[in-house]
Image 1 (cartoon, one colour):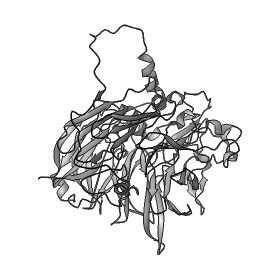
Image 2 (cartoon, helix red, strand yellow):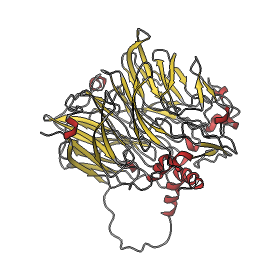
Image 3 (cartoon, one colour):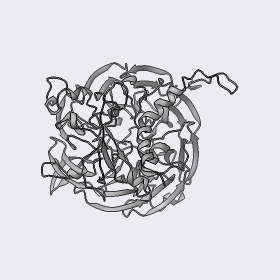
Image 4 (spheres, one colour):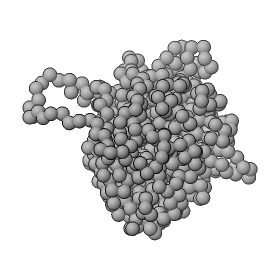
Length: 586
C-alpha cells in the first residue's frame, strides 16, 4: 500500500522532478559509457510529400464536418465535436479492426497528441516535442524534427505535446520551452521560430494552436509557477505577433479589483488548452486555468478574474466581448479550461446557440454563446461535494471542502477533475450526446504557505491523494444530453479515464484506459464492443480517416508513470510512446 506521505511526494515530483533531472545533467562527473557521435535532430524529406493536396484554406477549416480523407483540426472542427463522418465504423464493424501499422516515438512521458492527417500524410507530435511526418497508409517515416528544449524546463505535470495546427502549407507546433515553430509540411523545413515567453520564468506550451483566418492562436501553461497567464495570436505566414490577451488584469484595468493587494502580479490563470471558434459571429472562445498559488487563497482575496473562466473575444484584435467565471476564487486547482462544444439546439423548446462544457469542477454547464448568459449546470460526476450551483451559475461553497492546515475532509472531485484539459470528449450531433471521460476520485486539500520566487513552484499547499492511494479512484465515460446535462449511460472503468474520445457517424465511441486498453463502445448504449491491449496507458486523442476506400483509426498510446500514480495509483504500466493505427479489412 502506498503511504499518504508518498502521495504528497508525488505531487511535488510533478513540478520538481524534471527540473531536478535537468540539474543532474549538469554534473561534472565523467561518463562511464563509451561516447558516440551525437545523432541529428532534424531529418528533412528526401523529396516533397503530401503533394496530392493543395494548401489548407480557411474554407477547409470552416467546414462544419470533417471530410473522410483528412483530420485537420485538433477538435475535428471549430465546434470541437471530434466526430468523424465515417459511417463505416459501426458497433459491428469495429470488431474487425486490426493493426495496420505501429510507430514508436522513442520518448517517455505521456503521448497526448491528436494526429493531423492531410494529403495522405500524418503529422503527429510526441512528448518532449518530437514531430513526425508519416505516410498515413503505411507508417513510413517521411520527415522528423526533435526539438532541443532548453535545460531545466519548468513543467507542471509531465512533458506532453497535444499536436500541431495546419494552415496553408505549414504545420505549427508549440514547445515545452515556450516557442512556436512553423514547418513546411511537404519537406519539414523550418519556416519560422519565435519565442512566445521565457520558459525560465515558468512558461511552457503543451497544446496545439488554433488557426482562425491567417492567425495561429496559442496559450501558455505555468499556473503552478505564478506566471501571468496569456494567449497570443501570430501571423501564420511570418510568425509575427499580432496581439496578446492577458488573462489576469493589470493595474488600473477592469477586474484587477478582484485581486487583493498586488496578488494579480503573480496570479496564474494560464491559458494552456485549446479554444473554439464560431465563424457565423466571428467569435473566438478561450478558457483559463487556476489562480496562483493553487491552494492558499488567503493572500488573493476576491474572485480572481479572469481565472477559471470562459472568454469570448474578437479574433482579429483579442478584445474581450464577454466572460463567464466557473469557479471564483478557486482554491482547489479546478482549472476552467476543459473542452468547449459549440452547439445549435433547442433549449427549453426554442432554438438557441449554446456553448457547453464539462468543467473540471464536476459540473456540466450550458451557456448562451451569444452573450454568455448562464442557463444550466448539473453534476456529471457521481461524486461532487465541494459546492452547489445557484441560479446565477455561481458556486455555493461547502465550507468543509476549503483547504485547511489540518484538513481531514474528503473533497470531491480531486484537483484533476472530473474531466481535464489534457484530454478531450466528443459529441455526436445526430444523437445529441456528448461523451465525457472523467476521473472519479477525491482528495484532502491541505493549505500551506505560498512563497513566490520566479521560476519556482508556487503552490500554497498540496492535495493528499487519499482515493488514489487506497485504490478507490475509478473512471467513467458518460454519455450526456448536450442541452439538459442528463446522463444517458455510463461506462465504468477500474481506473480514471484520462484519454480522449472519438465519435463516429456509424455510432461508435473510441477511447481507452490507463491499463493500456483501447476501447470501442456502442454510442447508444455504452456497451464495450471491442478491446485492444496496447501495453501503454492511453492519454491521447484518437482520430479516424479514410484513404483509398479503407478506414483507419489512429490511437497514440503511452502515459506518464508519475501522473498515473498521482491520479490513480497506477505504477506498473511502463512508459514509452507507440502510435497504433488500426484498419478495417480492405
